[in-house]
Image 1: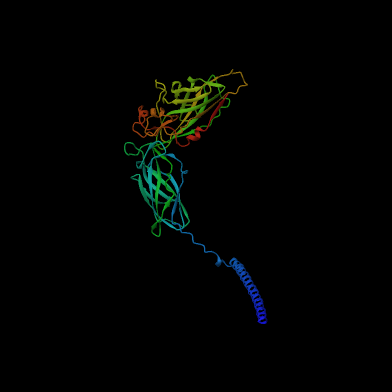
Image 2: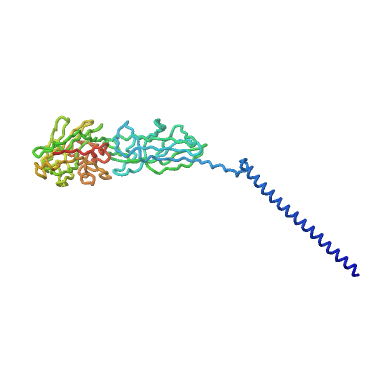
Length: 434
């Protein structure tokens, strides 16, 4: 029994040893398999990256951009600038500019809607001041409308804006002729045009329109205009204490209808010299060859705003120099296309001894402009004079009997705000020295 048991024990040990060897072999095979799989996976991953770098078909798909079907409007709020325009038959004024931009598709434009709105200031006008509105593509008209209300549409001739393209447009208007006794259009009335909508289609379907809202600038209709200009002047060494010294020279031209003048204002700056308040004279002439006739003197001038250093001098007109009441406060009628020349003169009073040659003496003079409307309703000349902005008072004489003495008391007088070229004239200073 003992011998047999020793054999059994020996056999058991041999079996365990064989099983241990098999286990080690299996474990080794498992490790090799795992290593092979890892290497294969890494190689496959590296190979995929290499292939993907060479073949774009392995990249993520790029989604197409959505097609935008829309129209964008850009309003030009700078050009043309706000201005006074002459209301007359046949006259056409540019009142607005804008550009249309198509997005990703071509757009067919069939009509545009406009509105007349209140101006930025002054008397509020409307459709009565307008005859027709025109739309131009470049320099070619593509539509017009006879204006009978403040909201209206203009039908356009065949017009297409290509995909991602643009087109500039110009809006022009013929202003109604001003004749107070015949037509309802009011002198001095202002307005703005506004583009409200554009009928834009792609494939017969309307597309949204963006960029609407801004209006064009303000245009005020008048029957005539006084055009102010400076005249050549050299006052170096011309100052005198014994005779009149020329201080300022300028001219006024009426446009295609008569214009009325009521008041001029000047700004004086004195350096070591005063001016005799009672010595001022404003001369008027049809030529530059002579001073002409007196149109304002002494009491026709308001000197209340002057001091030893200068200030504001206001000149009220007395054509004929025959009004016993001063200031005269009458008006000068300038006929259509007529020019009148004016010279302001006065007597200097030295504030230092005249033989003191170490003192520089000079007088600087400029005509004064107005920076805003006199009001938002029709005024007569006196009402303009009582407003905050009253440096220059004139009329387009859009009323009957404008040449009579009652004209200044008739509504239809304005200041110099937006009178063409007045800004330039008012920016120029004329100098006189000892």
